[in-house]
Length: 379
Image 1 (cartoon, rainbow, N blue to C red):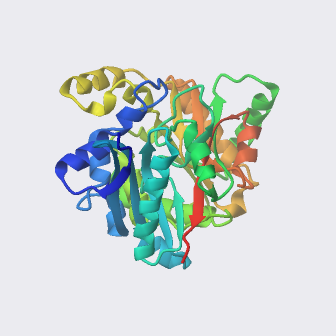
Image 2: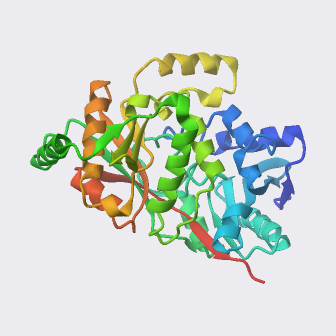
């Protein structure tokens, strides 16, 4: 039998469908996998509609073995980010494959060839074009499904990346879980401190005005790029990426749980809580068929147990002033009143000098770790 592997570009509509639906082959027996919404994936990868294509280019590939798909990968260049920080990085994502290192090797080699043709000198990933979607390879935490925007990968993905000479791009990114019913002395003390800050009145908590969302996108863009510059692998956020991130959640977000902190009329912090729709999506099969939509609607009627907090952004000069403490306490009060039982805080880098320590002070614990890899491209 001929077991040779061939990697070809996605050109036809049928190939695009194979690319989009291939993950179902990898995770068919994995109860923790949350199938992505096919309609959203299709939009993300469409050069006419995907926000990434406003800043760069990308190409999709399928690995074939014995006439059948054996793996997928996407190669991309974010020209805006590369120009801003003076690098020549190729990103890769939508990286799925059967448990065979030769398939992974062939897919990554095809991305390397694509990158070399464009004079790029490093490969980094996996990211699904948007760095907030499907970030990295899961290296710890297989006791519960991922929350919204977090990924899930088989155990062999980590082993194969390291066998193929990839190194961690940065310290691991980690997800924390915080229970709202925590009645420990530590949590009670933090609640008292938050109440003291609240009474002093120097920090004002506000929620977004949905009719002025463009202005808040500008505010979030500013906070992202001023609050994260201390990170080892910091990359500037293009405004279009922020807009795309906010657009994803305008239909599902509860404005009462999107919190901004202001000091003297200036926005100094952002703490967005999003319903963890993965608790419904895990039952919806990516809405591949009409009856899946009915399942999704049924599960969407139920309140998720988790509110996912995807960013904890505080301007550095306010790190020690209690702003984050007040934001968390306010979130816990509001979310618990609405029926949520726990908060996910994800993702933050393990080398972040502020957020992991803050999460631990709030009584949160690490429950997942993700790793992004990089490799130089020989000249």
